[in-house]
Amino acid sequence: MSYKNQIASVLAPIVNLEASEIVRLMETPKDSKMGDIAFPCFQLAKTLRKAPPVIAAELKEQLEPALQAANAPVAKIEVVGAYINFFLDQAAVMRDVIATILSTGEQFGASDLGQGAHVTIDLSSPNIAKPFSMGHLRSTVIGNALANILDKLGYKSVRINHLGDWGTQFGKLIVAYKKWGTEEEVRQAPIPALLRLYVKFHEEAANDSTLEEQGREWFKKLEDGDSEAQALWQWFRDESLKEFNKTYELMGIKFDSLHGEAFYNDKMDRVVDMLEAKGLLVEDEGALVVKLEEFDMPPSLIKKSDGATLYATRDLAAALYRHENYNFAKALYVVGGEQRLHFKQVFKVLEKMGFEWAQEMHHIPFGMMLKDGKKMSTRKGKVVLLDEVLQQAIDDVRNVIKEKNPNLANADEVAKAVGVGAVIFHDLKNFRLNDINFSLEDMLTFEGETGPYVQYTHARACSILRKADYSAKNSGTVELAAGALEGAESWAVVTMLLNFPNIIQRAGADFDPSVLGKYVIDLAQAFNKFYAHVRVLDEDEAITLSRLHLVAATVQVLRTSLHLLGLQAPQEM
Ligand code: ARG
Image (spheres, rainbow, N blue to C red):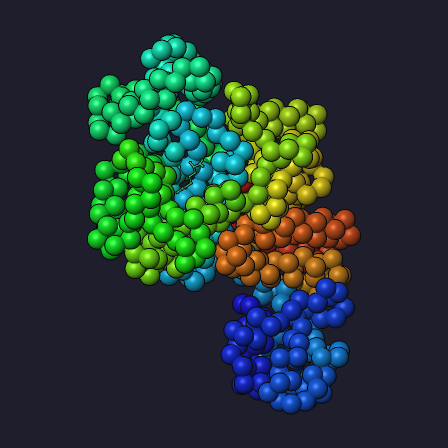
């Protein structure tokens, strides 16, 4: 149903370019008075050896009969300078788009681009015994939306929570717990308790130099399977996960795998052996490293002088495991920009090991969450607990609802959907590499570019349909009465709806959910403008029904967009 494709396939034999290349060159004019699709002729100038405006004018003559013969819904073509501007046959396009959306429902915009291939998505991945940071929130939200979008494009996403549950810090934690901790404290509030112990350890270690050594010993015991160390570690992990799960549950996020770093404890020898066999391991001040000088990078540290493995070693083992288990077409790592070098190194080491699939691994970095212009941190035991932030958002929304819609039946559920959605959307409307300023106030306004605004627009459109008894009136076939959807406001909504499949493709190809985040704001705005200008309920039944069809199609696309971004779409709020 893509009109760009349809026009491109008519244009292809005439200009001797691939249709896909033509689609790539096509633009959408900023001003709809200039048409709906524009094709610039600059690129053709080289091969045809003519000025682009001349080419455009000549092409117009050839195109007109060809488009007619192909039955393409183009009403007219205009040449402006080097551009050929196509004006779509609005009535035909509207009927076509609306009918397609209403008959395909949540499937609208889906494609089989991915052909069922696996894409592993490493997301969230918080560190056990530490608070769930804003960075982990960003990873969770961006990774989850990407997974949804890739699924829609026909891939099979695998959400992997690569928990930070291994490393020397667990040795320190065990020492601290045995010295200063109580079971009671950890049970009551695991994360703050474990954080307190961790902070205490570092304070004490400043005066007692034996503590570090004890920490290393306990981590060694843990790595070697000592039962006391194992039991404590397991308990810290379980208690932490319980906390994290509260957050995941609130956000409606599920994982396909919770294999964190510890899972690779017994899978690292193999990596070390493979590196050894390939002659890639070199000794460097007692440690074993893989040199990456030829890529202008510092060496990748594989094994410390005391034999302990490292973050990178575990990521190498994880990459092999994921490739063997999922035979992925792509492997994504949604991790903050601070770890750029780490992932470059890991990918390069895999490349040096001779794995061609290393080309398909992508680090998806993102910027920081700032508060008053500064990085939000959890240092010095000052904890910003994410579930408290979410709870605050929910409470604030509940207050707004109490005021605006005191009789709302499922107010608690809606407050949850809107409060959490606000936090998620605030992240996803921004290009991921940008830093974001954390402000509950900004997130929660019902006007402006927010989750609540989009959800509210959706709910309002739903209520129009309910009040007009649309489901009873809709026979299933879409006929649009003459004059029902004539103005620029209707056309603006329709062209946005039409563009939805392209938006999903772009968001997926660029690993950038904000393409969809921005789109859904634009769609909501276009719809609100339509609703302000066009009286949906007309005296004429046929006209009313035509307009309701457009409302219903908009509801569908708003809802699908929200779902893809990881938000709910309440029907009332
Ligand atoms: N736990 C790590 C951190 O908080 C993030 C892990 C990212 N994933 C990975 N495969 N390294 O920094």
